[in-house]
Length: 431
Image (cartoon, rainbow, N blue to C red; front, side, top):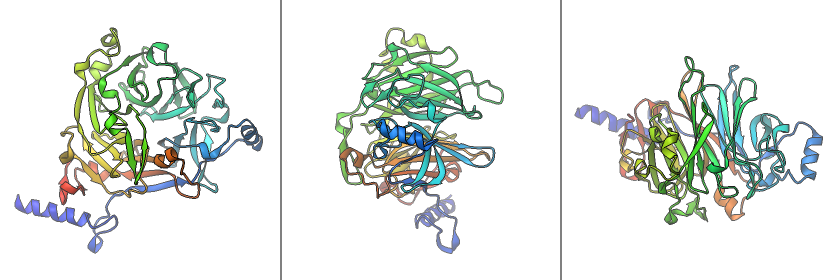
C-alpha cells in the first residue's frame, strides 16, 4: 500500500510540471485547446442583397453580437458541425442561431444562419420564426432542442418557445409555445434547456422526453413533458440570486449582474442547478419535478425536496455533466476549470482542477459534453469577455470570443491531477 501511494504521488508530481510533455517524454497532460476565436463576430448571408437589406433595416451591427452557447455535432463524414447562439440582447443581430463555417473572415470564422436565413425574425414581427435563441441541446436521438426567449432587448415580442430540429434533415419536428401561466411577459427570460430522453435509441422512440428550462430573471424552473406536450412551473428560494454575489470579478474587472437560475444538469435521478449570482450548488429529485400533479397547488410546492449541496469559492456560469456523472464548471475569481462527481460531497476536497489557461477561460457562458463517434466524451466550451462587454471596453482587435475543447479520457479513466492550493500533489479519483 505504501509503495502504491509513493507511485501515485510521483505520477502527480510528473503531471504537475506543465501542460506539455513531462521529463523523458512522459505522457502529455490534457489541457483545453482553442479551436476557433473571434475579435468580432462575422455574419455570413445567402446573398449580397440579404446583407444590404439587413444593414438598411438596422439588423446588422456586428459589434453588438455576443455568442453565448456552443454545441458540436459529429457528422457521418467525419466532420464536425458547430452551432452557436447569439441572443438579441440588443438590436443589430441578423440571426440568432448559427453554424460556424470553415471560411475565415477578417475577425474570425464566418457564421451561417441555421437552419436558414428565412427562419430568423429580425424585428419580432413573426412568431413562427426564431426571435432570440439562447441555448441549445443535442440529444442521442440526433435532434436539437432550441430555447427561444421571444425577447429582443427587453421587449417580449413573442411567447418563449422550444423548437425541435431533426439534424439529419435540418427540418422542424416540433414547436412548443409556453403558455402564459409558465412565464411573466417581459419579466421572465428562458435561457437554458436541459434534456432527459427517457426512451433513447436503439430501443426507444425518443417520445418520452423531459426538458427543464431555467428562468434566469424571474427565478424559476419550467418543466416540459414532450409526450403529453404540457408544462408547469416550479419555484424555490434556492433559485434566487444571492446579493452577496451580485458583483462579479473576472480577470481583474468587476461588474454587477443579479442573475438567478442559470445552469442545469441531470444524472437521471436529480436536477443539479445554481444561480449565476451565487457560490452554492443545489439539487432536487427528478421524481418530484416530473409529476405535474405535484405542482397543481402552485409553483412553490414541495420546498422540502430542494436541498443545498455545498458551496464553491466563487461563482460560475454554464456547467455540464458527462456520462460518468462528473460536473464541470469554470469559476470566476480565480478563473479555474473544476470538476466534481455527484457521488461525492460538494466541497473543496472533492473538487479537482483541470489545467487551463485563465486568459482563455473568462466568462464561460456555454458548455457541453459531446460524445464522439468512437464513444469518447469531450468538453466543449464557449468563453467571452462579458466583463468588458458590461463595461463597454470591448475592442475588436483583441480576441474576445473563443470556442474550446478538452478530451475527458483522463478524468473518466479514474484519475487526474488537481493543482488546487489545498490539494497539492494529490490525486482525485472519480466514482
